[in-house]
Length: 479
Image (cartoon, rainbow, N blue to C red; front, side, top):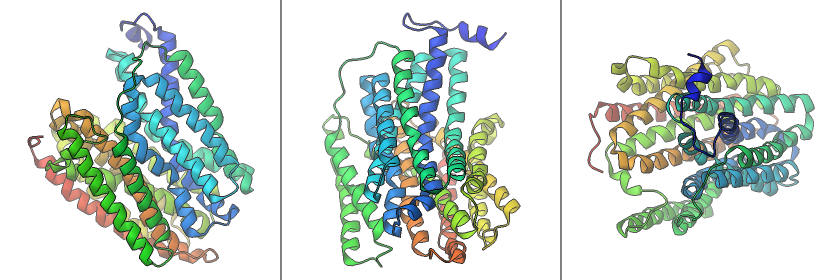
């Protein structure tokens, strides 16, 4: 039986057609890829951006974390808004991406570029949660299986695309214009996504917008803002007293956010995040694994881009091609580990995290002033494979253990933890790395890796212990 005949067997609603449905899927997959594109593109462009705008390390850290900050802060809010109409909010997110491209491309100062990247992150946060929801709504049976497989591939493809296209543009065009054209790509792609959503994502949608937890959103945003300022500027200034005050204020804000969310839940309202789930003996350690694995990725793509370009003298495209070994391996393994015998699935995550910790430690042996390229590519590929398998298997295990009515709340926590990990990895460990380098000393970019890679390896080893704990439990405790 051919794929087209298999797909045609699915019942189509009156507003749908096979052609429109698969054109709509193309729009959704490109949107998802753009959500993964931003942080990767910024990391590759960071050395050029810093040189072109003469940015000190603190401002560069803030700009580099702008996309992740916007995505982390508004991701759950974007999912909540989607309940009022996924197509409508997908289109709004696409238009914000288009606007962010113009702001970033024509930025004259670091704060304009930060604003553009922040807006891109907010646009992605509104757009990305609608993708899987629309796939679930518009597809069924064999067609849904195909669509979800393509969706999984788009996650890694977006990272690889952000690395390779950005590297190609900046290497071909060169100078300050290269990174500006890279960010300008958001504009035509965002406009195409908005038009495609209008034309091909046709479906009756609810008219009322659900009540959004604005208080929780404000508290979460302000707390992360204080944390961003603290991590971006504190280390480079020698941790002065103001950075201690803002750091403590951010922690107090997060604690207040948790209390506020618990209060909302007790009164029967829908909180931004169901933080009460953190009391579970399996949810919290699982979220730690998610944060560490995604934070390791965010840290590596940022610091290795600086190391390869500033320290090893790679052109932008060569640096992007080098790290694409990680991204492509991550994308591939998410399609492969599920083919293993079912009895092995429980222990895929611990085994993968053991490999991840080891490969991160071994990276230090191949990243000297002159990188050992074959070994570096092998270790990056191993890191991507182990990250993808460890992350995917643990998330699958956790969502299978919790009660069905808690899966949406757990998924929201997983998505937030993943993006928070990327954000903290760039802002904190990336900041430590950048602060230990000297612009005119290529050797310093190699020696500074000793501040980052052992820490990542240790954090992954702790994640291994958490994964063993979660995977050894037969079921979740009462939630």
